[in-house]
Length: 438
Image (cartoon, rainbow, N blue to C red; front, side, top):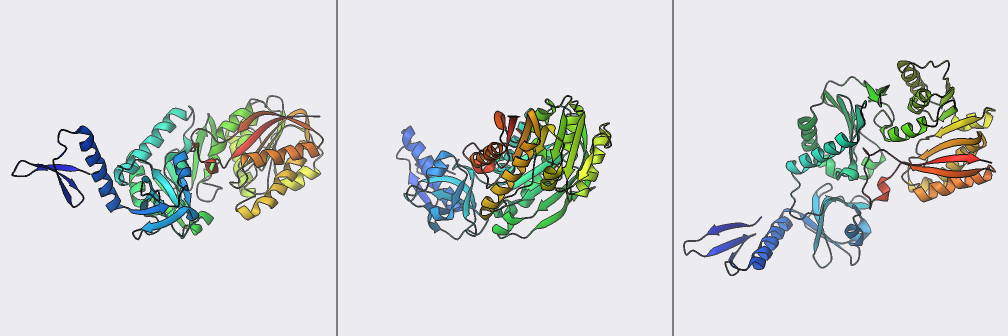
């Protein structure tokens, strides 16, 4: 930053890096502004290494996209290491943004801020955490004590996921940049939230691509492994240590509310039911029969607990351990409502063709078993299956089943999972609410 100091001969100087600039513009407001701006930029450039972009490759950053790929980089000034903060600049040396750098990855730059006067320090992360908390206070409904607290790029913290389950936090780190700031971020969470326990589940392919080893374990306090949460007044048990994602599909809360409204007197099938949250909502909505199908007995056991703790008998709302594809082919039952929420079929770009066939197959079998006038809520959480492709896959399945589908609503995660509007890759969960008829 700039600083003014007075010399004995009463001439005012501006300190800009190692240069002293005399007071030639003391009465020139624009001149002073330019000196402040240039000296601030000079100091910032000294603090952070810079990457220069090929001509035209800055366009995505200017549009608000938070990533730059390795092919966009013309040259690097300095010796930044993976996870360091760098300045992204045009080939004409115009500074554009600060972000995490990792030359090991295709995504070489991840945006932190376009404010070139910003310093990425403890106060920066505290502000980010507080902003994220303030949003959740506005969007989380009453009778709910679990939510996505920090959603990576959607909250300006690329690679950081933090889920809150009542008095406990579960977090994961997927980028070298957040890894370097891990202790500062953890201290901020402790200071702002004061949880009883924090558990880390930093694992998976994303960390491998960033050159990071998996880290799993208790990061703070006492951690019981399971938590009992409430969501819209319903009770659920969460396995925070080994459950899918961080233990519960928090991103489906809004969609469960929607499906509940259609459930009165309906016969429902919850396929890939996991711990049965959609089933519990359907039961509360007045469904006369709900079948939950999942291949995991551990998940099914939790689903039974969830039904019983909300006053619904698993005998009246049966849970079936089975492969969903096989079950749909073999059952003769017809349903008024069907929920399809499968795991990600495409975990890499090379999996897209195979995943598309799997999505079409499961949706085809589902549509064939929905009564005329019934409802299908179908989802994909595969990053590599975008909204347009998913819609085409489901439309093909409906056509092959000889049915007609009317789109009632597009579905996605709730408002505690914000995404950057210019970052479609962040919208991993996409869904369709369809009215099916002959």
